[in-house]
Length: 282
Image (cartoon, rainbow, N blue to C red; front, side):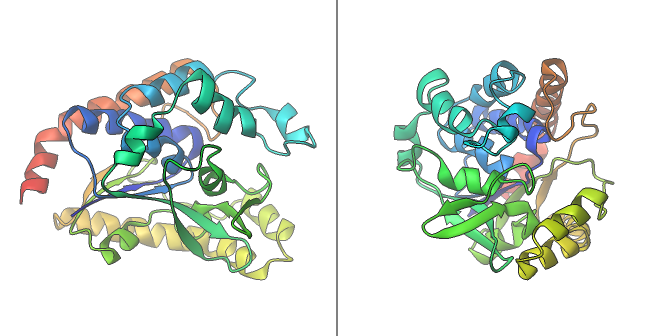
């Protein structure tokens, strides 16, 4: 059984989009997909087999002021750096149509990883074609300070990367004996507890378990990366990491940079395709 783990990283996740399109071209479809934050938001177009849709999203929509910007965060009806209803409703339902029927035909399972604000723990919410406003994807992508808390079925969530940034262990736990892991940072990147993280910890002090998850995130992330790299050396998982992110930041709006990062992922996947197929055939 093939598992696919998609790390988040907001705009940096455009690297993953190139890889996902290469997987589609080679008829490689995972049995279980675990998407974190933007990994989930972009991953659904892979599950719906819409080759090129993420590229268009990244180069035609993300660079526009309608998609994201400080004005949306200051809007009391939105309270998010991203234009929520435009990004998760207008675009997929009108401007760049999402293929809900094909997602419904997907024979595998798709999970959006979210962090429960009360418990500070990861929850793996099943995604299907019925949620046409993409509330579970909103919850998975809900970066602290840049998003409001997103409510799904009576629970409040924020970004899945807080509790489980790279959920490859969940894929293994659920029976995946082959695993592709797509990271969005270079191989030697290690996370640090920066000033923004400390500010978030203060902001969510009324939710001590969530604040604790924020405080331990860097340590857990770095340990997870070390474990994945060791499994990669042993040939037990197949890992993609970008050699460079071309200076793309979390809220990147430069179409040229986004295009370069997508192409980097696409070329990387094609370069590694023979090795990947050999791994899957073992």
